[in-house]
Image 1: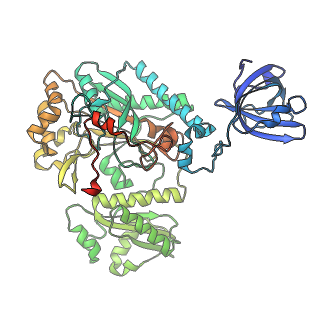
Image 2 (image 1 turned 180 degrees about the horizontal axis):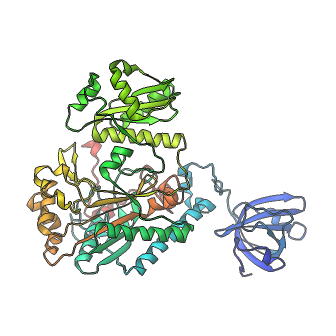
Image 3 (image 1 turned 30 degrees about the vertical axis):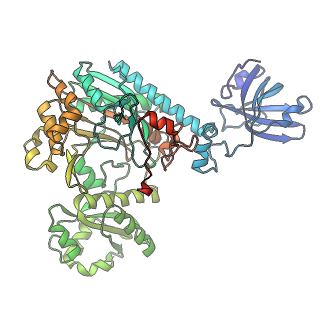
Length: 584
C-alpha cells in the first residue's frame, strides 16, 4: 500500500474514493462488532471504521500502534464539527500493522496530566501531541516569514562562528577546552554581536542570521541555556527608519502565520516613562492601570517612612490603585506586601477607600490635606485599594510594576487574543552593579551613547542615555537592539568606563577596535529571541513548549540526562582534571 492522503486532508468531496492512510492509533472505541479508531498524524485526525468480522485483528490494536489502512471514504451519519475531517470517515478494507507500542507514560492529547519532567523525558511522545506540533509548526512558519521578508529587503544571510573568543557581553559564557592548544579555551557565542558588526565594516550593509546562542545563566519560564536569535544588522539607517523596517517584518509574520493585520507604527515609550507609568522596562500596555507619582502629595510629610525617602537623591513615592480591591483580606494584603518585598521594597502601605473615606493603619500619619490630595491625585473610587511604595525610584517602580502584573493575571484584565507591540527607547547607557560598585553596560558595551548625552560621559555616566531599544509584546521583550559605536576612541572610552584597563581592552578587543580604523559605517541592529516570540504568539506558558528538546529548570535534559560525566581519558586529552572541592 502507498499513502494517498494525510489524516487532515479528506473532506466530503472525497466520499466514495478509495484511500490509503498511515498514522498512530489515537483513540479506539468498540461497539459490538464495529470498531472506531481515530488515526493521527501531524496533519490531523481521521475516523476509521472496522468491521471486526471482516478484519478481526483490528481488535488487537492499541494506543500509539502505527498502522496503514486502505478503505473507502464515507459520509458520517453524525458529523463532528470540532474536526476538519469531521464530515467523513473511512471504512477500512485492509489493515497493516507497521509497529507496536508500549503503553504511553503520558496522554497524547492537547491536555495531558503528565508532569513537565515526564513530558521532557519522553519528549518524542510529548511532541506527538497535536498542540505541541501546532506550536512548532507555527514557529517554523514565523522563521520562514522573517526570512522571506529579509531576503526581499536585500538582506544577506551569513553564518558566524559558534566557537569564538571569550569576550564579556553580559551573561556568563560556556567555555570549550582546546585539545590542540593546551590550557586555552574557545567560548560558545553568546550572540553574533562582534561578527555582525565586522560584517558591517566589511560592507555588506544588510545582514541577518537565524543564530544559535549560548548563555550559562539561571533558567526561568522564558529563558534557556541554548536558544535561537533572528539576528539583524544594517548600515546607514537611523533609529526610527530601522524600527519601521522591523515593524513591516512583524506585519509580514502576523499576516502570513495568523492572518492578522498589525497597525503600524508601533507606540514608542521612553525607558523613564515605561518605568514611571508601568513599573517595567517591558510594559504590558494591554490594560491601562498606571503608577501614580505621590512625591508632591507627601513633600512635607511627617510620616518618617516617606520623609526619609524624599531626602535621598532619587527617592520616589508611588501608588497603584487596585480597582474594587477594598475587599482584600489581611492575608491577601500580606501576600501583596511579600510580592513588593521580593522586588526590593521595604514594605507596602495599603489604604482602602469605602463610603468616600480612606482607612488603613498608616492613615494616622497623614494630615487632612494629604488625605485630600491623595484622593484627588489617585482618582480613587469607592471600593478601591491604594497600594503605596516608598524607596529609590527604580525599586519603587519595579515593585509596583510586579503588583500591576499580579493583578492583571488575578483579575484577567487583558484580552489574550490582543497583540500589543511597543518600542521601549532611550535606555540608560549604564547601571551600577551594587556588588562590585562599578558601572556595567545596560544593554552591552557596543551601544552608542546619544549625542546630547556625550558631555555627561565623564561627569555623570549614569545619566547618559543610549540609542538602545527593545521591542516588547504583551509584557515580554521579544527583541532588543541598538545603534552601535563606530568610532575606535569612543569604543575604548566605554570599555574604560566599565572598568577595563588598556591592557585588557587590547587583549580582549584589540582586533575589533582596530577594525574601526578602516572606514567603519554607522550601523545598528536588533536580535529577536525567536523562542520567546514563538512562546508569546502561540499563547504558550513556557519557552520550553516551543523548543523541540529543551532543558528543564534545573538546566538538565531529562531525555538524555545531559550534562553527564566524561571518562578520565577524555579529560586527559583535553588537558583537564576534575577537582573535588569538598576535599580541598
